[in-house]
Image 1: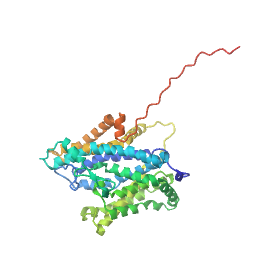
Image 2: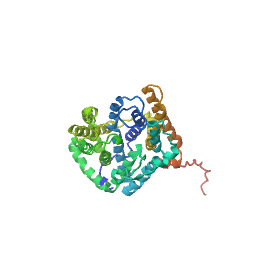
Image 3: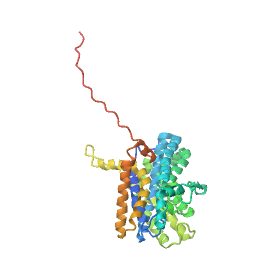
Image 4: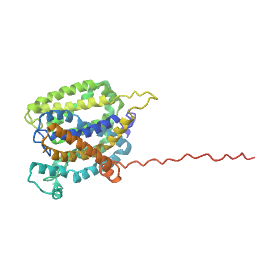
Amino acid sequence: MGADTGRPAGTGRRGELDALRAFVVLGLVFFHTALVFSPDDDFYVKNPQTTGAVTVLAGFGVVWAMPMLFLVAGLGARHSIRRRGAAGFARERLLRLGVPLVFGTVVLCPLPQWLRLRAADPGYDEPYGRFWPRFLTVRPDLADFPFVLEGDHFETGHLWFVVLLLAFCLLLAPVAGPLASAAGHMVPALGRHPVLLLLPALPLAAVNALLGMEEGFAGWNRWAYLLFLLYGFGLGDDERVRALTRRAVVSAGVLGLLLFAATAPGFVAGNDPFTAWTPFALFTRAAFGAAGWCWVLALLGLLDRPRNGTSGAPDTTAGARRYGRYLALAALPLYVLHQPVVVAFAYGVVGWSAPMAVKYVVIVAASLAVILAVYEYGVRRTRLTRFLFGMRPQPRPRPTTAPTRPGPTRPPAS
């Protein structure tokens, strides 16, 4: 794209961001299991005993984790559009996100809703096969864009992330060129005034404060995630911006902690901090939005460290990189799989007469084992399942040619 000409940009994939994405996806198993024990979240299955400590600990994750996934997706979009063009990028996103979205919604999302009904009413005995078509009975609802279908039991569940990501990518494609050009013009100003790196916090604060926070989307307003994706698209791979981000780690991290701490009174003692229009609630939501950008910025700089390998030295991190690549490719399938598995194990475990800590560990350990096993043996190894979960076909091994032996040397012609 013309807007990228002459603009210093990173080459290849950023392995640390791939690893962070996989870490966030696996961390969702811990997070959603914790919601089973949270007193103030309408999760599918609830333990009879709950603890408010879950709410506090969850806050440290929601402020940065899902925003980081959208920012990394924006960075990936920049590379994809550069290779494929805007139209090719849109087609590729429809395939890689649209197919697992439809498959996951039809095949996986009904199970948590059915288990919710069973957990809430011990007398509910409707077979799953009879509930499944009722789940899929939908009607249009354009007012909740991009969630354009609704039903008495229908939901996209945890796949809200895929719905938003697909919609945002399709919105981005036709304006990618002008946005890339505008971002390129901003970089020299950032070099002169590094404090401008904090400027994206202001739109995020405004969106969260004025449009309200949405509990179903990990505490953020859905349109705040669009801003994170655009920030990743516009600035994430510019080497000059990366250098400034590395230098801003401490200042952004400290500011983020202060802003996050300032939200505590509103979330603990405030009256409906997610949607209320009181000055206290507005401040709480604005501080949360600004804190999210500061945390993401600090994490980007902290992870983006130069590699000072010594030439000729043994590569002691080869194994770690291999596992990192494995998990990076698995991120979307693991995301699609994880929540129905967590809910299923929680449904079976919450009735035990055991301490909450024991139940939590059992649900997490069993869920991780199952989703990793299903990915390895049920998704990764066949062409059809790779397609259904948004993975590219497995690359064919390159043919190896056996070395040819030299034939007998003919004597020179006389």
